[in-house]
Image (cartoon, rainbow, N blue to C red; front, side, top):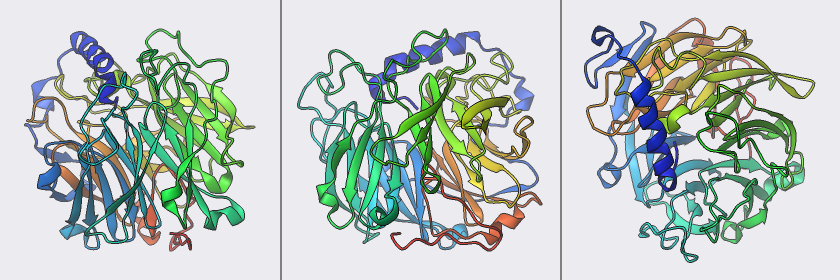
Amino acid sequence: MLSPRRALVFVGAAAALLLTSTPVLAADIPPNDTIVTSPNVSHVTTVPKPAPIAATINTDIAFQGHYAYVGNYGGFSIYDIRNPKQAKVVSSVVCPGAQMDVSVYGDLLFAAVDSSRNNDSCSSTGQTATNKDSWEGVRIFDIRDKSNPQYIKSVETNCGSHTLTVVPGKGRDRSKNVYVYVSSYSPSANFPDCAPPHDKISIIKVPLRSPTEAAVAATPVVFPDGGNETQPGLLLPTSGCHDITAYAEKDIAAGACMGDGVLFDISDRLAPKVTARVTDPNFAFWHSATFSNNAKKVIFTDELGGGGAPTCNAVIGPNRGANAYYDVKRGQLVFKSYFKIPRHQADNENCVAHNGSLIPVKGKDIMVQAWYQGGVSFIDFTDSANPREFGYFERGPESIPGGGGIWSAYYYNGYVYAADFHKGLDVIKINDRLTNSARGVRMDHLNVQTQESYRDRGGHHDHDDD
């Protein structure tokens, strides 16, 4: 979703789409807040947001051991998911600053701040980016004590940090450093720390033995000749990236960069190189990327309307606000198809392709994905030219004004965890022949934007650093 700094653009785009949408039959829409699922999907539980951050919306999720870390515009919360049916809040950190995209690595949690603040503290308040003294960037927390995380370091980055991606060091460097790729955008000549051109990313180097020495180590330019800025229908012209997914063990990454989709060679962690680049006339805002397990496919998402518009209807159609599937052939991206949920949503339901993850099924390409008020979709894209939904979870229209729905939905050790704006953390389970074998794959951590290969049934991720 677009940051508060970009609210005027976001509201304008959403309003324009509202005016062009057509009604969906009321009989097709569940009552407000009512859960509806396909027969193979069940709702396990919902853990409400803890009181200190109940008034602000949930965002992204990271996992480590028996814990889920849920970002929130007001901070983040740690959930004990040892028993998913009885998942519970362990602690909550109040530390506002949109959008609090989170990743964990070892004893560290990284949180993205993309709203201009009067300082870097957890008691900061909003302050215009035209003020040179304003701060936005990345906060680092020590999470060894799950009941009492400690804020240990901040790193300011140009244009803040809309999202972030943790990239382990390579070879011997892995035990010494971790790198954080920071995606940010929307520069302005009036912003001293976010001036155009801003066709770059920021890379923070974090020494694992002394994380308080973390600092920006490189600011590589992704688009030296400028990105896609003139295509009709773009939500915003390219000025950096919205999100990057790294597949570190393969030395590659995929960038969703507003008007462009790119592949990177990240064999040099501080000097990623663009190896392929595509645009799409149906894409308004390249939002996120996911590799297939073998990295021979990439799914890009289009956040048409900035996350606040009702784009899952017949008028918008199946090719906009959708997933786009690409095969990777000789290092280049070859378009194969689009996918969008087939369940039309009401005109008061913000709905568009958003954050999801792979489900580790041997020999298949399966994904679970959030669609805001479109809920959660289970998708088989083994045939990248013919992806299909085979399960879903959703609610009727949000009763709280101003939009809502599920921001991110990720599979972790047999269950799907979904961060709902207002409701809290949903726990969902699927029972289907396509996915049941995934229960044999156990993970000890998961940052979805830091992809790792999964092994066959019974496999296990295990890294000394984590």
